[in-house]
Amino acid sequence: MSAASMSVRRALAFLGMLVLTCAAVVVGTAGRAHADANVAVQLGYADNLRANPNNFPTPWEGAPNVTYGGCTGGCTFDAGAVRVINNTGVNVNVDYIHVSFGTCVYDIWRHNVPLAPSGQYIVTQTINSFSAGCTSDGSFDTSDIGPNGANWSGDCNQSGVVPLVTVSIDGVVSNFDDTGKILNTGGVDGASCGMGNESQQWAPVGSVSCPGSILSLAPPQQDLAVGSPATVTANLVNSCGDPLQGAPISFKIASGPNAGLTGSGTTDASGNATFTYTGTVSGTDVIGASTTNPAGTITSNNVQVTWQTLLTGDAYGLKSSGLVSIAPTPEAGPVAVTGASTSSPPCDANILGLIINANTLCANVSTAVNPDSSTANASVQHVGIAVLGLPAIQIGAVSSTSQMVCAGGTGGASIATITVGGVAVPISVNPGPNTTVNVLGIKLILNEQIATGDATDHTLTVNAVHVIVPGLLDTVVASSTSDIHGCV
Image (cartoon, rainbow, N blue to C red; front, side):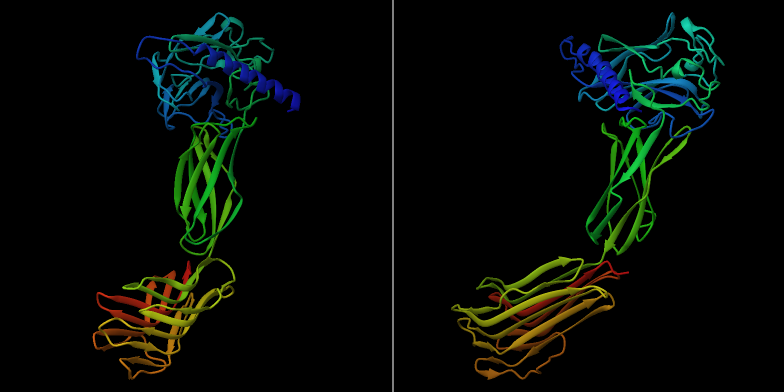
């Protein structure tokens, strides 16, 4: 289609909308809401006798928010179709829809149809059969209607008929010329004159024919960390790019770590529907979207979401709560990345206080890939703790380390010396995990190791020394945490 043709088509569609929009601004009886903008009228042609799902008007019967006025129960369609969409944000009432071919007028559908916001009213043939020419039996084979209702079946001569669609909403009547001759397939019997399948996708009244549809899924590729959300957007438009609103979209992950996961949505006024999910393990998901109609299924392209192992970690020299509150100092992290990284803040020279003092506190966290790993380290040269009424605690040089890979974690601590009230506590330089010593009302946990996780996520925290004075003080010295998420 040329740029000029596209401009004409858009202009005609806009003018058609403008007539209805302006006509619908009315004042009615008290307490009655009326349309103040944007009631859309669209046309299509339904033909599953010669099925082509991409061309069949979508959405159709059974779609969300659709009031359907047509044949039900697995019918075969060969008929024009009209739909009214309420995008006003208020309730409206469709008093009636008429379609005229000269002196031949169709008034075969339900009157007084209420439409809530985003509601649609779709009308088409009401019986499961087709009759050429002007009929009153419920068939609506509009491709076979010529001037003033003449039988145009098999006729390839241009009828010159421009169908007229009349819509009354809240008592306001608006007339629309089907200048694109969508309802009568260009003014000839399309099935007999080279078209074959006669289906015409929904298009704004006054538009040229836009017979096909495109269901696209985007973005084509996403690279995300395990545990974060991924969103894909399906867009459904006709072959002229007009959005196809109100279509039910099904999403499915065809392969990958989340294979079999499904979702659903309904296209909005822009033709968009979204699907969001969270990946739990690493790998690449392949996702597709589809929508169905009585002629079959419209499918999208496939997109990919690659979930990368999430590497996290944290480390600090000292933290305390109770009588003395000290935030983690210094703190490396928390780190959360999918690639190689290093977090290594400057060492803190001193913590000076009446109850707690410490010097030369250091921490760092590093991550690596191929293979994936997270490593945390922390160290402190000296810590002194003096709680009134309790013996003083002196802790010599300590350090902790924690490393995590998908196969599991390792960690440990080294402790030079500990004295309580001037008396040395007999300890190993490398105490076993969770060694507990109780001295004069003070609890010391040495090489405290806390492991959590499941088959795909692993975390290991190692605290070199954990000092607990019940009800008074809780202090952690040299803490290292390494984590890995999304292992397979």
